[in-house]
Amino acid sequence: MVKIGIVGAGNVGATAALYAAQKELGDIALIDVVDGIPQGKGLDMMEAGPVLGYDSAIEGSNDFAALEDAALVVVTAGLARKPGMDRLDLLKKNAEIITSVTENIVKYAPDSQILMVSNPLDVMTYIALKVSGFGRKRVYGQAGVLDCARYRSFVAMELGVSMEDTQAIILGGHGDTMVPIPRYTTVSGIPITELLPREAIDRIVQRTRDGGAEIVNYLKTGSAYYAPAASVVQMVESVLKGKNRVLPASVMLQGEYGLQDVCVGVPVKLGSAGIEEVIELALSDDERAALHASASVYQESLDELGI
Image (tube, rainbow, N blue to C red):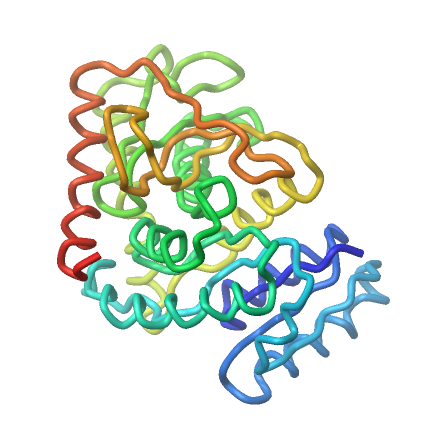
């Protein structure tokens, strides 16, 4: 089986490992700096295999050498956001963590792709890309898939329809500056602009922007992990099976949408080589302005770090 590396055995990393094992996407190396945590969780998931019916091996380790020969490495390591904490508050500490993690990926899995999940997502994706030198096809971030999952679920809940029939596109950064596009949000191909009044759409869009914070406020001492992990695995599956799914991802833009040298969420074709294509949508002036405003937030963060 192909090997999948997952760095960070917290709730998101461990749940992603379980979902990936259930789909038998590959064998999994689960890495964490805390002694015993990846080993214990990995063994627990292995012991679930006979019941849930999968043969993927899950090896927990504190040693990055376990990433050797990994085809794709998912990075969930870093500090979690707490109530009242903005994603950008995490910036400097997580930048140090991601730099160290990326250096180890380069050392032990130099031919891999990197799927960034750690926050602030768009900034951490940029750091991993620059530190690794892998290029934008092989380093990208998971944000828009999660944001769209939340957006789609809220649309389905509002309309009382199947969640499977909803589709959406969200541009921009993973956070308060995300840019949902209602005219590209559909139910079985019908734009929600024809199904919902403006005020309902605005309410759903705002709830989507606040989606992570809403769960943090409920949990008090943690953040979301089921939907983030499911979103990770959708991307992993598209890469490892060469499915070429069209999904939103944080990717380095090189002139697309009028943006340069910044990672931000846009729709991409995601396949065996990673980012097979960046898809450039025709945006209205307001939509383009919102996307540029979102990108500027993360450019400011990079400037603060001196990158």
